[in-house]
Image (cartoon, rainbow, N blue to C red; front, top):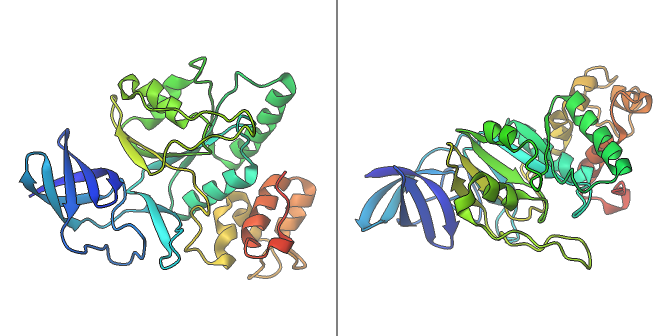
Amino acid sequence: MKTGKVIQTTGGSHLIDCDANVFTCTIKGKLRLKGYRSTNPLAVGDIVDFDESGEDTGIIIKIHERRNCIIRKSINLSKETHIIAANVDQAVIFYTLRNPETTTVFLDRFLAAAESYSIPAIIVFNKTDIYTKEEIEQVAEIMAIYAEIGYRIIPISIKNNKNIEEIAEVLKDKTTVIAGHSGVGKTSLINTLSPGMNLKTEIISVANLAGKHTTTFAQMFRLPFGGYIVDTPGIRGFGLVKLKKAEFYHYFKEIFETSHGCKYQNCTHVNEPGCAVKTAVESGEIAWSRYKSYLNIFLDDDDKHRVKEV
């Protein structure tokens, strides 16, 4: 019996990294990890036991208990979730002001999901080389909001090799999920950090400036300086599937801290009187963009009340 880490899973075939060797394995029977109702029994990052069945092949006989996982809504209506990655040490979310545009609502949804699983999150602001002076000032304001909250901020330019060494140091010896819209530079970063990988990068459509998806499933790559990086597919309905609506504000750090001053213990911070959070938003202590994101997530099931993303 051998133990290894799942680095790719497609259909019934799974690639397992074990002692620097890669095995192609199938699952014995109907293995399911207790407590998970999902479309996929295995995800990249899972630790498994397997028996060799041939040269570089094997049969998975056990899935180890997960420390954590990142999930999204499943397109399969008979199931609840699809697991993107398991046993994650940290998460990196890419933000670009344009080419393609990343909304703060998208960013905040990812950060809230990471908070809910106690996964430290880092925000990478890419494409700093393409912005106008006004756009640089706009990005600086956004970075200041998240730095004040306590998130680590790293502005980079993959094209100009800006702060790539800092990124490498952050990723070293960690299992890291990277996420963001197609075209933000995730694959380009992997190719820069591990040139031998030669992954296909996303092409930005001239018609709508949206990235064309090239990653259709999560993939895990071993970094040459130690650690693993998980490149995720386009993520919709990300992360907050299993959380109770009344707890959403717990995962906005500054909103949760301020909520202790609310008049009512069960305050939802939407329309209750004596709400310390709304007072903090009005005074500028909490950024309106963050509160807007909270409202969008909280009111997600009621489109007529949704705050417009701008």
